[in-house]
Image (tube, rainbow, N blue to C red):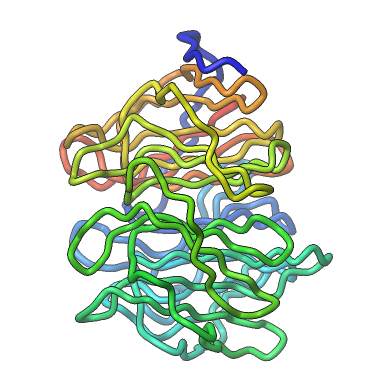
Length: 354
């Protein structure tokens, strides 16, 4: 297997209009039933947002929707198989989640979580069935501490229940990645002492337990990305911070052996606050982010078949803390918002065409 990085340029970016408001630290998800992208909350440089909007793929327009019941940033947004969207937590460490109906464009249910949390992660639990009804929330911050706990929302009961045990380490700004068969891989992040963690844990939905793993990230990292690639049965970890310095390293974790592949290579650019999106052909698009206090418009593409990174055409705008959403019916990726090098919060969006 080759470990070269190839300096060619692939893919095309298109400007696709502006959101109805500027936002970063927002979240988004694709709604297949309406061929639209739901964009929720965030920060507009003054306060947390309760506004939501839809990107309509049919005419590349942005349409405002009803507000959420609580303003949020550093929250999570997860779509279930019935199209209901679970919007959970967020700053300032809210203990309230809401159930959003994207077909009607309204939030109609407030749900108490077992604990307030922000800067947590979430994953829709894939147990191999045709329907997904559960969402795992992991770690994050409450008003005073970093959390070791997890919550599971079950849409069949409409309530949150605590994971039966705690993680071995408290963490926030980590990743939680569904890897099938009811398992979620939790990795990295920062602890209460602001140490970047290298530890991994596995959530087992059948036992409702966290299980520590012996494998370690190399090095520890926070504000990174983690992407499950089914064709190679591996999770790709890219970038992030180590002691406030963006990383140019990546890790590849084999979920069949729970071990890391030894790599003698790096990404094309150091970056954190970026996004990583699994494309329809199972390549991974890495977009934007921050390189030592400099926001970037650069992008790269990971090719699992050859274990290589190649350059992708730059976006028109440098941005970090943005969202990237795969349009599953076309294979395009919608990138929205974030913050540019001048610390301006953005409303601009771009479409990536592979």
